[in-house]
Every structure is written in structure tokens, then in C-alpha cells.
Length: 328
Image (cartoon, rainbow, N blue to C red; front, side):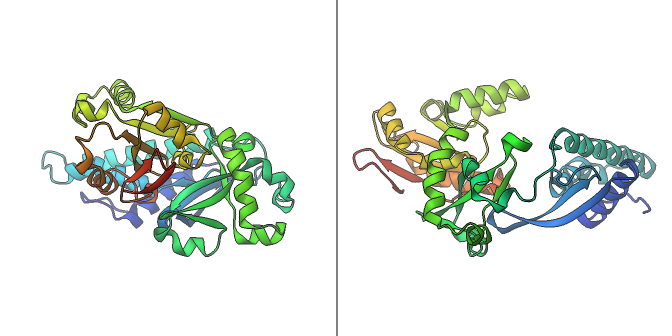
């Protein structure tokens, strides 16, 4: 492909990346690219590097790298001080570095063992690793027709086999209706097992917004986080997730957890679904930010979250006296 000083289309970017990776992987390996439907019906290109000695491989989504490419080269297109030759040279180095990064990610997340294809034939193999997560009901209607689920407010509880003890990297397999037919069990049985397993496998973690902002400032060296929230709000905000920081919003389903937290706060609280991975809790004793809550959720969803990470567009309210979570 001849290089001009213009941004590549996504398809051109994908072609160049695959050609570079093809040149770097060993002869016995092969690239496998397929469209993967993620949460909220988002379709991504999933890349797997298949080796003859492994029947399972981590999936790497290359769409995200195109966004990084556009951010990196977008300003250079209009810069007359950068020649076409210099642009082409940097682009070549960029794809080489990116390819090595992807190969490193693949290697670091490659499961140590092969996957036993008979594992899912017997429910006894699965049930100890059965967990749940929360997804938006309306944004996943097509998917929900194919998988067991339980409606919850405007959300849906869906079920996963958590393979991390076997393969690491928070690997999961979504439970489908075909699995239920094979195992001859019902949705409710999945829920009863998952409500027992999930808090043990993925225990909850509560931190303050101040702690989160402090950690972000330390890790990035950027003080811009300091002004992201007013002091009175940040000091009274809490982040609820799980130990893996993956699908942590499902902690709101853990038995009696929300009531225990209301006892800890000595009040009811608002619950902001900041993503599928965590929620923000705000005790009601400070009402100065109430009008901002729903707007805050929508702004975060629109500006900061990947589409597949959105859980809901509005806030919830946990009533301490009623021991119930409801729409805000």
C-alpha cells in the first residue's frame, strides 16, 4: 500500500496491521479475525493468534487501536512542517511497535493449558465457577433472546462461567439457552448458584472517590483530576466494584450488601451506574449535587465510556427504610 499524508480508513488500518503481524508471527501460527458482538450489541473485530499447540487464544479487539492511531496521527496531517517521507517513516515504525505490543499482550494472556472441549458437557464442571453480571435490558434485547436472564429494574442479570482459575485474565464464557437445554436446568437454578458463588469469586470492594482521584493523579502525574468533582461531592462519593474490577456493577445484587452499606453511611443513598464495572454511591445527607446526578451519568456515558461499557443512563436510589433499590 502506497503511503500518502492522509489518515487511513479503518479497513486500510486493519489491512496494514494484519500484514505486519503476519510477517512477525512464526510460520506455524495463524491469524484469525472475526466479528464479535459485545455488550450493548456493539460489534468489534476480534483478533486471535492461533498456534498448533493451543486450542484457545486470547481475543484482542483492534478497533480500539484505530482510535489511538487517529489520535496520534490526526494532528500531523495538517502540519506542513512534517514531510510525506517523515510521515510515512513514522507510520511504519508505529505499525511495527503496535504489532509487537499486540504480540506481547497475546503472549502475556495466553492460557497455560488447552481448553477441554468436553468441559461444558457436564454441569458439575461449570457450577462452581458460575457467576452473574448486569447488562442493560433494552440495549441487549437481541442477545437476551438467546441466553438465560432475569429482569432486574431496567437491567438484566445474565450468567457466565468464570474461567480465571484455569486460564487467567478474567476469562469468561457466556451461558446460553443451548447450555441450559444440554444441562436440563432452569434460569432460577443458575441464579441460586450464582448468587452464592459471585460474592466469593468476585468479592466487593468499596473505596472513596477521593482515593480514586488520588490514585489517578499518582499514576498519571496529571492534576486535572483534582478539579473533576467539587470537594464536597468527591468527599461523599464511594466507588463500589469487585476485586477484579470487571463486571463490578453486579455487586449491587449481593445479598444484603446495599443495606449493610446504608447502615455504614447511616442513610439512604443514590446509586450512579458509572459503567458495567462499577457504580458510584452518594449518601443523601449531602444534597448539593442531586440535580447533577442523572446528567453526570449521561455525560460520562457519552464522553468517557466505550459504548459496550454503558450500563444505564439514569441514577437509582436505595431507600434504607424500605431496603429497596428503585429508579431515581
